[in-house]
Image 1 (cartoon, rainbow over the protein chains, first blue to last red):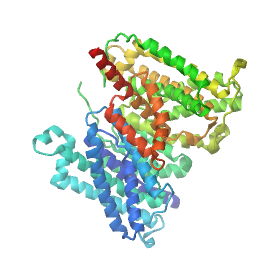
Image 2: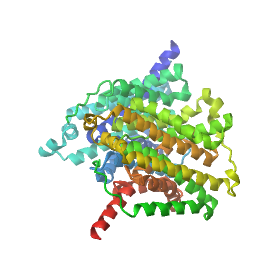
Image 3: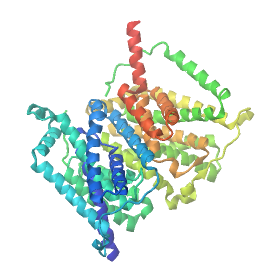
Image 4: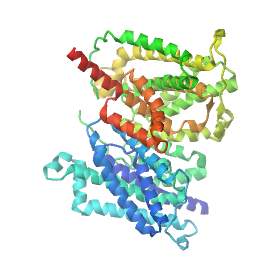
Length: 288
Length: 325
């Protein structure tokens, strides 16, 4: 029972990371109908920025915020400079462009910060830990929840958030009422980048930091997004927590750690076959 | 997505061009260095794999980011049957194809219900999970686990005075030619039209009496078969298979090759194979430190300049020349 509770709770903690990545993916998907395969690498790069700052003596939370700002600005820049050029391109072309970005960011990170696996500090004091969860895991859940609440409040209560939702839902009508749809998309990219950065910085003390750290996490983020419903951001967040728990319990009791990634594969396929819209998604009906 | 067009008359230069290409390809092993020969063998093998992916992604519109998994199944079939069953390598090639056909067909069954991004994501998950599945300890007896398995080299048959490398190149070339002819024949006939019709308008295709479920899973199977045969040949070239040779990177490279070569084009597979074999080397010469950043920039630049891939760009060029001339 003790170990079960431990696995369950630490699954929830990991789930927070998947929830954030899933949320970032869904935000971009809703606005553009593209899946950003470079999301994980963008996040990884921002985590390196914060690590570099911390090593230079910047306080943790200041480094955290600067890395988030970096993630935001670079997300906006990527959309404005690269993605925009492929507005009307076929899906496959866009997928290759995302993969190109993935290669570029991964390679730059390896060159600037080396491919060595490095430890990453956690800001949470050991005293915070309990019988079931380490201090970092508790802090991680807190940070994830704060992130989700801030994002929710932003979209729900600010005019800018409303404009962004409108631009994603109905670009033509939004343009007619004076919303700059192109910039809203870019802001969405920036925001998604910042949310991803939170996930990477929280994950780094657990998985350690290296240029390929996000490959597995991105996969679980996909699973989270699909489980929750790829057109429902909050569904994706809840999906993230569920995926985290399933992953941990399956890893502990069913398949063992060596097949953990296959759990994501199974989740994805089961969801898509039995309930393609996800738990909280709307079934999309197209008219022909 | 391009619309199905009535079959245009083939340009008169096409057949001679193919013959010249084949003659050159057959002479090559006797004039280039063994390192370049190895690279060219890989081009031939990648071309087979990309053709398979192209049938699925280009012609049938099902995006796969996981074809590295089928390549791996083909490679492991070759390695295991040589090592454990002592079968001759040439007999294993069709077996690897058959195994991959079945695996692809089975994976295609749930994939039937998935379109576009959803299929891309599930195949992506397959590709990420592949190395873990290959390392799985219950299969270790056959797969060799983390260490992998060696694949021996052989002598050229019939007492031919050839090195194994040279023979392997010619053998791969022969298989590639057969498979390209099969694909060409398959795609220009009613089957090909059905496959592309499903991509362009599934509902209209169904109205015309096309059994979508059947065609889609069969296309998945055939596509996996091509890629699996390529994997089997690839194992002979590498003389070694291990889980870490079949990471997500392989799957992504295959998709990159298929798209940059040109989707829905048989020759696109050759251009794509040249791209994924030689551009990384070229990028490495430009900068050792950020090789893959250079490669990624090339990918984006190619997509910007030629949204329909190299084959698409060449076709456009030809049309322009013809209209002028």
